[in-house]
Length: 270
Image 1: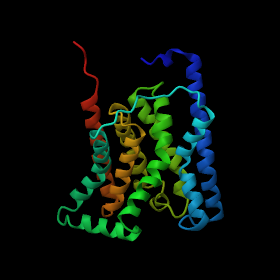
Image 2: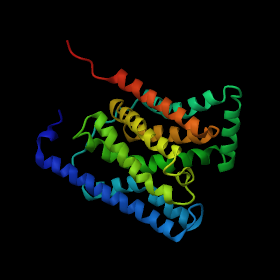
Image 3: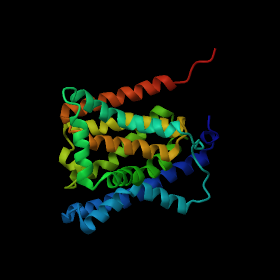
Image 4: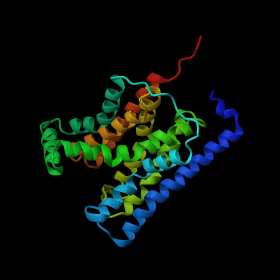
């Protein structure tokens, strides 16, 4: 067991750091989003788009603020172990559920998937623009905070299951204002809808799988960024799944997380 768990002073310090991170993150994110919403500013272009993008980077920016303020703090989390396999696993785990659901829903016309992907890529300005946007909008903007800062500190208190539940809840709460901000995909889906419910439920298995690639495989934040990017990109490139398809995607994602949990559970010693 981690030695920190037996030190009340250091446990208290970790709690204070997490609360400080939460406060900084919410100020950097929720305040600008609230102002944009109150003013009715477009987030698709001009200053509104810039402010929205910076606010969406709140988790990673908060992690940077914490690092600058507390450089003397001990490093948390396992050391990163570089390998070829870990990034590949991260990409597969991230893209499997959206792509799998799309395949199952388009068995009568599988060519619809690449056709739609080609249209999406062309619409955003080409492959390089699509990749750059996919990595920055979400993965890079968030993961240095969630998986780089919060997750390893939660692991000083909780096991994998509890860490997953707590971090998924925090991650979901952070997204809530987007459902009230016109111009976002969350606003279009609606908070109190089936698609809204699927989104929040999906954060649980997604968080567990990210814990697996970052900690168990020692891929670190880079693996989380890859997995997050693969999820977002696959979700955008496949044809619209519809409400039923979103539930199917959640089922595939949950099944994947369950299989990983079963395969990696500690073996009893004889």
